[in-house]
Length: 132
Image (tube, rainbow, N blue to C red; front, side, top):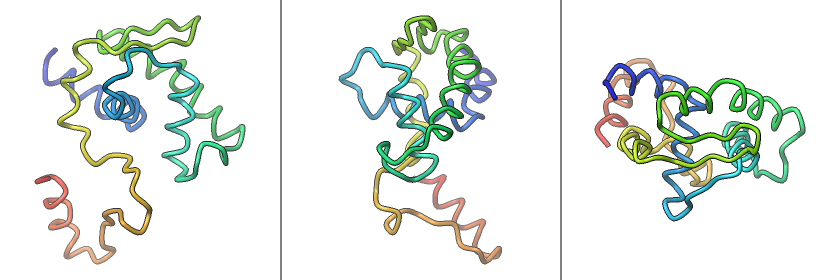
C-alpha cells in the first residue's frame, strides 16, 4: 500500500475509529458491524452505548455501511461481508496502528488532553500530541 493510500484512508475520522476499535481488541478475529457502529457512535457522542439514541446509532451505521467499510475492504484493510454485517481485519490492519494512538481515549473526560483556547500555545499543544 502506498503512503498516499494509507493517508487517504486515515483522513476520515470514522475510518480511523474503525481501525482504532480493532486495535483495541487484538484478540478478536471477527467483528459485528452493528457493534462497531454503536461503539463509534458512543465515542463520537461521549456517552455510553446504552444512552445512544436511535438517530445517533443510525448516522454512524449508515456511513460505515455505505462508505467507510466498503472503502477499507476495497483497499484490502478488512474483509467486509456487507450482507451479513461481518468484518474481519486483514494483515494490513495492523499497519495503521502507529497512526491511531490516542484517538478515542476511554479515559474519563476530565483526564483527556485538551487543546488550549489560547492560540499562542496551540502549536506547542499540537507538537506535544504529535510527539507521543
